[in-house]
Amino acid sequence: MNRLPLRLLGLASALVATVALTIAPTQALPVWTTSNSSWTNPRAWQPMVTDLRYATHPGFDRVVIEIDGRIPSWKATYRRQFVEDGSGHVVPIRGGLALTLSARAHTLNGHNVYDGPHLVRPGFEALKAIAFTGDFEGVVSFAFGLEPQRSPYRIFRLTDPQRLVIDFKH
Image 1 (cartoon, helix red, strand yellow):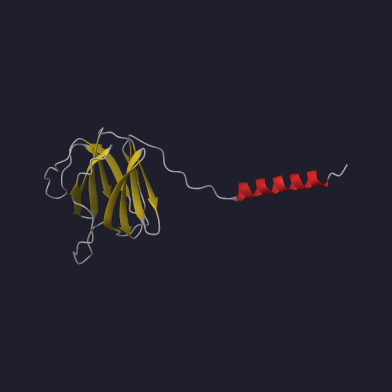
Image 2 (cartoon, one colour):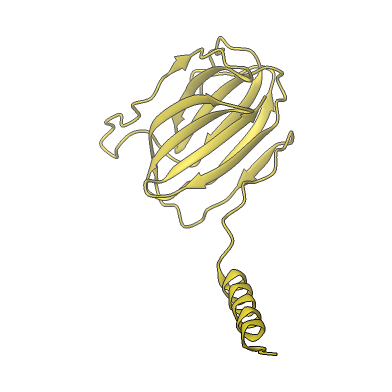
């Protein structure tokens, strides 16, 4: 009996297994959370927030924040009420998630570079409202009105161009 086909099959199986083990796994999305969270990037020097987009998808609503420079450090906290940075004026949306970024939305000459919405109510399943709440003393902040107010979220970054992505689970 000729064992050559069995040996070739065994060799092919071993080759496929070797290749599969050497391929880098795709980056997994972070887990959903209902806790306050933060991330620090000490290598981000004066990044600028330039835009914000939003959309709804099956199972989640997504916000994408475009960054000029490295992704800045950020902090996400649940709040019942939001205020504008600097002025302290109450933002007219219900509670949800506040996001602060160690960044700015203007050039060093004071020219505004943020081209996104300042107050919008998309009325998606989880994401009800978005407000740009400040560009003050090296901190850019946003408020996300959610339903329910502690909707699970996940935050991750994408590159080329640099973007910070926030998903809110339905």
